[in-house]
Structures are given as C-alpha cells and as structure tokens.
Image (cartoon, rainbow, N blue to C red; front, top):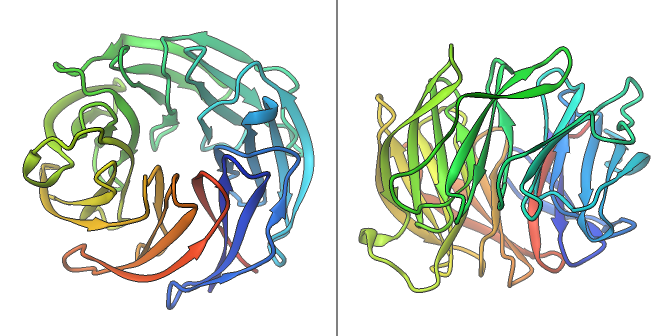
Length: 337
C-alpha cells in the first residue's frame, strides 16, 4: 500500500508532494503541487476524495478534488474569510468544515455541499477569545473543543449538532488550567475517554478525563515536555499525536527542537520516556495511518525528518531527510489507488 503525502508550506505557494511506501516508510519526492497562494491548515473528507485548505495569505478557504491515483488536485470552490484560520476540521458526517481563528478569537462552521463545494459564507460564527488555535469533535460527533493559548488559557467546550452543524456552548463553556499553560492542539485517545492537550506556553501536556455523556473535560495530570522537567529558554510546544494502538504519545518542542515521548498507562497517565532530536522548530509532525512511522517538519529549516517507531518502546529511529518548502506546518496522508 502507498500514500500520497502533502506538506503544506506557509511561506511557499505549493504543497511539497511525496509518495510514501507503507512497508518501509520511505518517501519518494514528486513534483511540487502549485497553489494560488501560500497554504496553511488542511483537512480531508472522511472518504478521502476531497481536501480543504486554508490559503491563509489570500484569506480564503478552498476545496479540492483529489485524484486518488495521481495525487493531483483540482479546485472545486473557494470561500473568502477575513482571517486565515490556523486549524481546519471536517466533522464525522463529512457535511461540515469547522475552523478556528487565532486573531479574531472566533470559531466558524461552513457547510460542505454534495459536490464538496463550501458554503460561500459560514453557516455560523461564534466569538470565543483571542488565540483560538484548534478545533475537533469527539468520536461520537456530539461535542467540540477549542483550545486557546495565553492569555486566554482555556479549552472551550461546545455541543455539536451533526444534522445542522450548529455549535452551542456547553456547561461549563470552558475549562482553564490552574497555571498559564496555554492549550494549543489536542488529541483524543483512540480507545478511551481521554483527551490530551499540548500546552504552548507551559511546555507541558495535560491529560483530561472526557465525560462522553456530557461532553466535559477534567484535568488529572500536567507533565513537562522537556528533559527532567527543566525549563529551556524560549521553548514553546506545538503539536502532539498518539499511536493508533494508544500506547505512546509524542509532543514537539520548538526551541529544544525535539520530540518528547510518553508512554500511556492503562488509566491514561503519561510517563516521560525520552527525547529525540528533529528539524529546527518542529511546528508540526504526524504519525502515518499504520502507526509505524512518524514525520516531522521544521518551520525554520524547511526540512522533513522521518522516523521508524519501535512498537514496543515508542523509540524513534531516524530514516531519512528531505527538503520541503519554506515554513512547513502541516502533513496530510491520503491513500493511493
């Protein structure tokens, strides 16, 4: 099996494009896919037939049809925005595109039509607070969460109506860390009612129990992403990801320029297991769909580093490096036909 791999470059008007061999994790460089403006966040429809891209420099969203054989993209529609969102997410029905807005402190919902075009205007826009950084729904598609870095320092909690796409504040409408951690991105455990947030300002990861009936979070652990828990001047965190088997969690350190590894205990508690050097300023990384390989891009290096994941320990073994575009920030996998 093979995958199309797209690297979104925030300072280059193209996707760096590779073909991934799932058996080896190796990437075969392909011709860059040109875009009308510099891209940011990317989301893919559940059936992997279409891609949604935040063209942040041009301040609009675009939908593209994906040719599953060639990997090439054909534009379907665009939708203008006052600000480029740092995060996009397609709900589980594939009918709505959710987005968060860092500068405006809002979240929006666009409709996805039967032809995968986007509604010309958002169906809904809600004000939250400054530095809204990401948005996702839970596995049941009933609730949505929106982390905000400092000074807001909160995760907003919403109910999500999947028939209409409507978001409404939950009760309580947000949860706040006891200290100024600055939640940025998050991931649900693949099998348990747990949510983990990586905290940009605190260089930490927070573990939360997720009440699947009420859609609320309760923090039960905050753990440093840095060696020995010692501060590193100028370090901020960016991304986290969990292996599909739910055994290991990784978080990226920008400044220390490393990937932190944690094991996940049966009760969801994290235990630090080590650090692995990566590209300079690892703003984004992703585990491949098989859970056997990890790919990390460096915002300040314009490089990509791949690793093999040891399934028993979670340790990362470097595989290869590739040059990509300027200021890479997103990695997307699409199954190749």
